[in-house]
Image 1 (tube, helix red, strand yellow):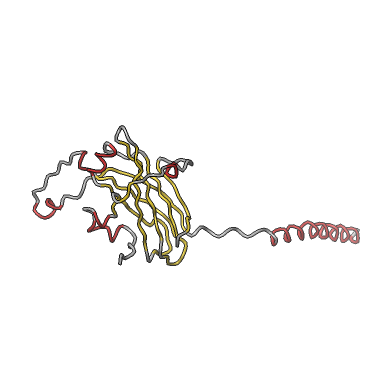
Image 2 (cartoon, rainbow, N blue to C red; image 1 turned 120 degrees about the vertical axis):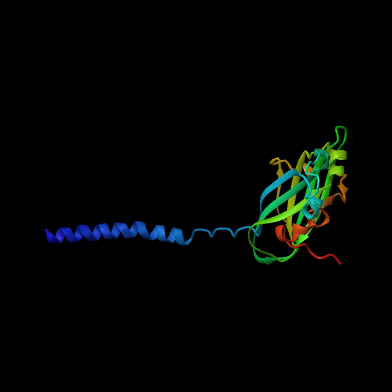
Length: 201
């Protein structure tokens, strides 16, 4: 009886090993997971915002009422980075404005340096209230952003979200009207809110 029990135990062990070895080999030969992307766009937001009232800040006598026509368009892109440190991180912005008759694509770009590894980095662009009123009746129809690293397109997205790359259909664009925060009333806080701009010669 003991001999039969030993035989059964050996048989069970042999069957277990027979099933276990292919499983181990299959696991060992499983393809490695692809490395995470160097960068990833998390969110793209656009918002009409009132400029800071520096007169009120320094004198206490500023005008607290801001007309809708005086609001800037603030576009912010949140992105993640995987390299320990990265230079030449360029974000290209595409803003669609329509004045009721003509649709125009406004374009601009900003390049950052010394971007550390991490999540939730911020990039920003602004449009002056006069431009927004003249060409967009106070609002943007859509915004798209492309992220390039060392000249290579890494990620892109748009708001409202859509798989359609509508910005590629425009052969004529308008440049020079998208401003970095450093060229707006928010310049005082830009250095702590956004990534470091690439110095201009």
